[in-house]
Amino acid sequence: MNGSLVSVLAVCATMGCLSIGSPARCTAQQSNEDEEACPEGTTKVVSSNPICVVEVCETSTGVKQGPYVQRLNTGELWEVGWYENDTKEGLWRTWYPCGQQGSEYHYQAGVLEGEA
Image 1: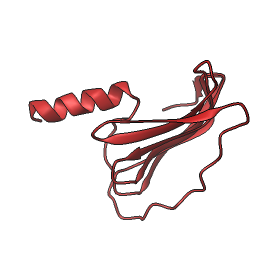
Image 2 (image 1 turned 180 degrees about the horizontal axis):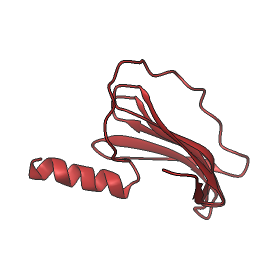
Image 3 (image 1 turned 135 degrees about the vertical axis):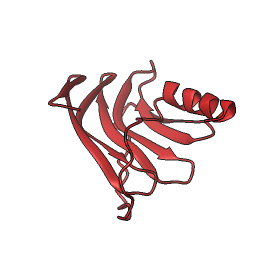
């Protein structure tokens, strides 16, 4: 990899925009999932970098609460999940850049259940 790509990937990883794993064959089309609204008392916060856009709901004190959506700048889903009081909760899903669903993870109070 060239130096600029490594730098962009490092920036993206610090934002939570990359879950690097082994790529799968990309043959399926990505399904469109309904976006969930932020819970009452929270506001959607959007941040971006050259590779991805992250949308997360936060309280006025910056606590993540509610849906989390991460997309590549092309608009394709990369990761979706849910935050409860600043910790990952429930089902989290990842997608490959071509739109094929990647992995599913379950969190209980921020702790990954089962194997990654």
